View (cartoon, rainbow, N blue to C red):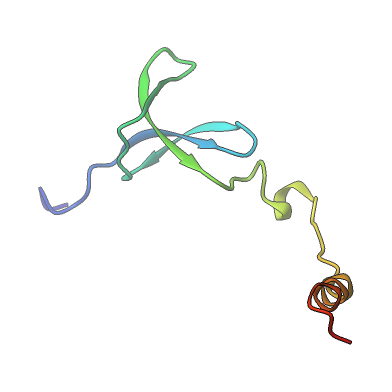
Length: 81
């Protein structure tokens, strides 16, 4: 690889903000937050909204919206028939 053209790749901790699940992985993302990991080393912390711990595809918990109920609530709210 040519020097100084690739981003700095290092280990970071990703934290799922909805479940608190954390995992250590390699990334080029930057963060000013740090956390001490299980091995005693300090790594940058990247907060994510969805991970394999909270994504419906991996957990099997899917929430289906009731489209009929939405329409009825809209009509009731705005007095439409």
